[in-house]
Every structure is written in C-alpha cells, then in structure tokens.
Amino acid sequence: MKTPDIFYVEDDVDYAFFMQSAIQEVKDTLNLTIVEDGTEALLKLQKFVESKTKPKLILLDLNLPGLSGLDLLKFIRDIPYLKSIPVILFSTSDNPEDVKASMEFGASAYLTKPNGYDNLVKCVHSVHDFWFNQHLRLN
Image (cartoon, rainbow, N blue to C red; front, side):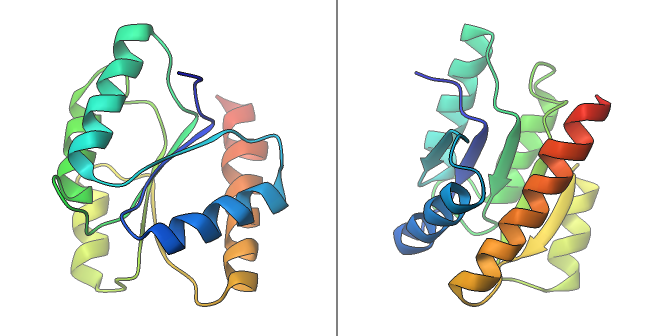
C-alpha cells in the first residue's frame, strides 16, 4: 500500500469523487486514499503504524458509518505514532458544538464542506497552501 499524502475518510461516494477531482486539479502529484467508514479507516491507520509509514494529512467527515469522525479522531490522538499528523474535520455541519468537540478531541482544524465544485477547489487550494506549503515546511 502506497503511503498517501492525504488520507480522507468520507462515506458519501459522490463527494469523495469531487474531492479527488479537486485535489488533482490543485496538485496532481498528491496521492489520495479514500476510505468510506470509520472502522475501515482505523484498520488502515493501524497498518500504517505497523509499516512505519503515515499520511501527511488526515481529513475526516464527522458523520461516518462504523466509528464516527470524532471517535476516530480520539483513536488517532491516542496512538503515539499518529498523534503528530494534522487532522482536519471536514463536515457539512456548522454546529458550534461539533466544532468545539472536534477541537477538544485534538482536531488541527474544522472546515465546513463548501457548496459547489468551484468552492471545493478553492477550499482544497487553501488547505494545500497552508498544510503542505507552510505547515509541513515548519515541522
């Protein structure tokens, strides 16, 4: 399994397709892995630990089958090897309680999913510029 630059956990296959297209449009060399539920994501993340590889960024939907995004975030932050990976909660919810809980459980950021493909591309561009061009350069 090739180590992804971005590990994206999203149960909406249509949105995942749009995200994949947007990422390729922003930076076609980024390697993206998409997983559809929280339980499967945890298993794949544990394989990263075993193989001593890890993604550069994790994007989590909040509402997932299996483990929720928050539950998965808790597991990620409890695994020392994965703890340093930036994790962004990426959800349709703009409920302040969801944002607060995400930050309390260790999310690096919380983004509300934008409406429309062009806005998604702009969002991905901003995430890429910050997390890949600025943040990773500093670490």
